[in-house]
Length: 425
Image 1: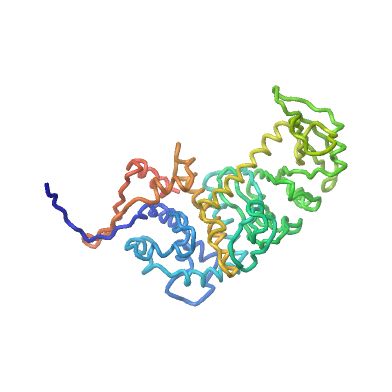
Image 2 (image 1 turned 30 degrees about the vertical axis):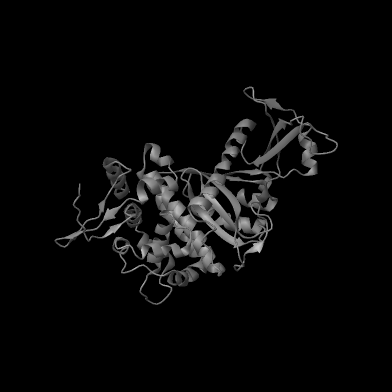
C-alpha cells in the first residue's frame, strides 16, 4: 500500500529547548548587565560580544565541547532568530572577542558577583556555605601557559590549574580563576581570591561558612579569614610532627556506636588571641594493611581546624559534605566542557573556562528558580535529553512569529509551569 507524503518548507531546529535558556537570560536582563560590567571596549562590529557569549553558553548547554562546535548552529535556520542575530559567527570571530574578555579579570569576577547578589536577594538567602577547591585541567599539545605541574589524573602531562568557589546551597560558582599549570597557590593568592566575594557578601548575609582542604592551610590565611566577624571556616590541618605526637595522647570518645572516635582541643593562637578549635577523628587501621616497616600506631588520624566550637562528630559531618565540590568539578569537566575548550592563547583559555563556570552558574540558578520535585536534581546531561534538545519550528503567519516546541519527553503542563516561574523571577 502506498502512503502519500507532502514536503513542507519551514524553519525547524533540533535545539528548540534553548528557548528556555534564552528566555532565562532575557529575564535576568543579561544583555544590559553584560554591558554595564564590561562596557564598550571596542568599535562596533557585526557581532556584539554579549551575543557571542550567549551563543557559546548555548552551545555548551546543548552538548558542545569545542569552540568550533558553534558551526552546528550555522546551518540552523531558527537559532539566529531565537537569539536576535543575523547569522552565527565563526569560531575565529569568537576568539577575537574572547581575547579582550580574557584580559578583564575584574569584570569577569564582577559579572558573577552581580548575578549572585540579585539571586540571593530574590531567593531570600541569608546564609551560605562555600566550598573552595582547585583542579588540574590536562591538555594535549603546547598551549600557552600549559605547563607540567600537579596533575593527579594524568601525571607528567601539561595542564592548567583552575580554582573555584562553589556555593553548596545553590550549586553555583561565586568566583573562579585559571592559572598556568605550574602554579602553587600561596597565602597571598588565596587571600586575594577570597577577598573579592567575602567583601561583597559578608556585609549583606547573616553568616558565611567556608570549607577548604589542608592545601590552603597557613597562619596568614587564617588571620585573614578571622578578620570577618560572620565568617566561619573549616580547614584541614597538615599532620606535622608536633601534631602527630599531640593527637596520640588525647582522650577519644565514640558517638552513637560509631567505629570512629573523636577528640578536640583549643589554642588561643588566632587573630587578637581568638580561639582556634582542633577537631580530631581517628579510625582503626585494617590489620592486614601495613604502610611502614615498623608500625608505631594502630590508628589513622584526621584533623580539622575551625573558629567555632561544636561537638567533634558534628563538625566532621559538616566538613565531610565538602566532598560535593568534587562531584561539581567532575560535572564541569564532563558536561560543561571545562578544560576541553582551550586555545593556544592563554587569555582566550581563561575566557573559555569562565564561560564553563558561568553556564554552570546559570543552570544552577535556573534549577532553583524554575524546577520542582525530581527535576531539581537533574544534571545537565539529563536536562539536555528532557528540555534542551526538543524539536521546534518557527512559522511566520500574518506577520507574527511563534516558536512551536514539540515536547515529546516533557509534559506540556510541566513546561508551562517552568516558564511561568521563570518569567515571574
